[in-house]
Amino acid sequence: DQQVKQNSPSLSVQEGRISILNCDYTNSMFDYFLWYKKYPAEGPTFLISISSIKDKNEDGRFTVFLNKSAKHLSLHIVPSQPGDSAVYFCAARAAGNNRKLIWGLGTSLAVNP
Amino acid sequence: NAGVTQTPKFRVLKTGQSMTLLCAQDMNHEYMYWYRQDPGMGLRLIHYSVGEGTTAKGEVPDGYNVSRLKKQNFLLGLESAAPSQTSVYFCASSPTFSNQPQHFGDGTRLSIL
View 1 (cartoon, one colour):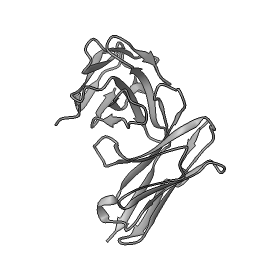
View 2: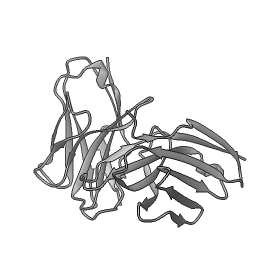
View 3: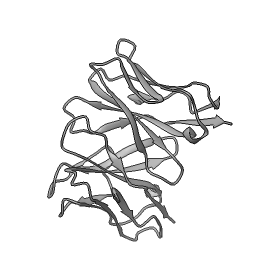
View 4: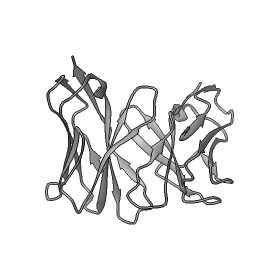
């Protein structure tokens, strides 16, 4: 039973355009959500996070939106750059759960020049 | 600033052999984690530690043991390796404070023949 779902295994966008990566979750106890980026042969790198008390968090070209009623979050990358090509993981943490994260399966983003 | 360092990066074992994976962090983080990543499965938590001398089971602890004798090190042991343990293993650490992201090492690729 997948509590964090990233339904698109891959996404391809043109350089300069917007990339939108989606994540759905089922556990209403999740209170903190994170996006990680992973390049081949490297470990995941933290990108951006959002608390459940917010509906938007922005950091440079990256914005995460949270829709609690729909149990949905999305990561927007504007403008997309070739260096953004990587696998993006959505992760979620339940309140009081010792910081254990539940991970989605990832979306592979390709940004074409 | 090394962050999280995993040793070794690659290893091939025969079924039944034992080995220890070492994780070291230089960020003075209290929490440390071991994950495995398999195709189509995302990241799954094996064991974790909330401080020196403590360990706890994650989602998939069977066949693994861990020790946290020093704050900066978290060891993952396979007593009798099985082909099902072929995977990429990631170590991560995080501070005590809530809503701080986990920092990952670059992984150990382990093949069990």
